[in-house]
Image (cartoon, rainbow, N blue to C red; front, top):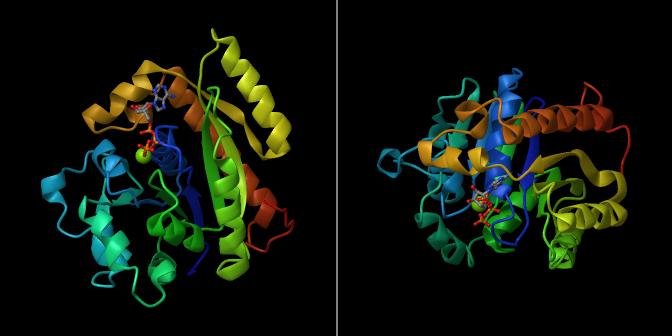
Length: 271
Ligand SMILES: Nc1ncnc2c1ncn2[C@@H]1O[C@H](COP(=O)(O)OP(=O)(O)OP(=O)(O)O)[C@@H](O)[C@H]1O
Ligand SMILES: [Mg+2]
């Protein structure tokens, strides 16, 4: 990667656990503290793009064209209303890429290659689709760390062994650096004992991989995308926005602890 770009994928093949909400608000909070951030929308649902106010009609080139090497990431990137935050948008066409890439050469490394020609950003945050398909595989091959959002509900850990095995496979075959960088508890409900039990269970399972910051269930967070705004812009004071701001500083601290300022990895932890 050029300069000091840090690439983090937000992944969990389970649907509706808060991947996109996390990608949008983490990216926004990082930009708010002066980082130059590119949010890469790898989900054909395009929720990260629309949630940042990018209208479908305004998307001329998307991640589809990037994966087919027709345009660079910089050409696909669009400015958002958040200073310092660009988004490389997706459209439903991206679901076609999944199939069309199957027979292509180096099909799993397309995003990684695109990122190698990208400069000018400190962070790339990748929003993955709810599946372990080729789009997620491209994201994992391109990333150095994975942030795994887990919804505080009974089946939170279900299916995670598939994600872990996929990460293992990617590490063995394409990307030895890859690791789970952090596990994020989302939609935590203080009034619900189950949330507390799930959180304790997850912390037992993942230890200090789990971010101290927990994202509360907060209706303001779920309203924000319909206005095309990150929760942090829509209502900065709401508890969900405040939690994402704390998460961003935890993410930065963790990156610095791992790499120092000159990107030399000082500790290597197993995923
Ligand atoms: N902290 C929160 N409080 C309340 N609602 C939330 C919170 N986080 C996410 N949601 C809502 O939960 C739903 C799922 O969130 P989100 O779209 O971020 O999940 P996802 O994992 O990206 O879903 P998918 O797997 O479909 O891509 C959305 O309606 C979102 O607005
Ligand atoms: Mg999503």
